[in-house]
Length: 120
Image 1 (cartoon, rainbow, N blue to C red):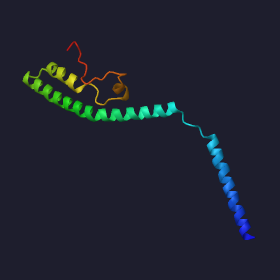
Image 2: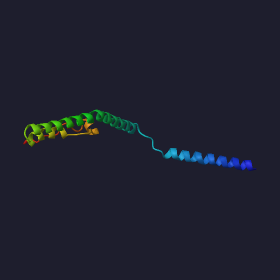
Image 3: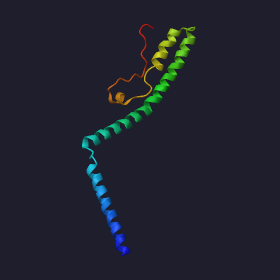
Image 4: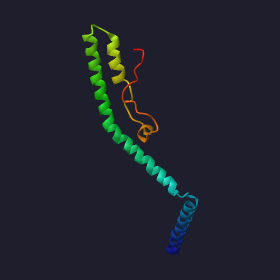
């Protein structure tokens, strides 16, 4: 008799598990193909942006560093003329240091160099 009680409990557990599994499957929403495609596209753009930044960031930092040194040298060689140094510093040190997804997609401009003031 103990065996039949244990068997019934096991059968009851199986039925309860099956009902819960069926309820979970019935309420689960299926991912649509466009949602999957959109997610894959976003993931791809994230990877593309990261790879682009692996090249862009060191190039921009190198450009800014050389511009900083060149502007400093221009300042010294002109006897302390800050306008000469500023022309070099603003264009080399200014600009974007990291690319965004919108820039990689072409939706926003990339400003590698800073925008100089035309009145300088």
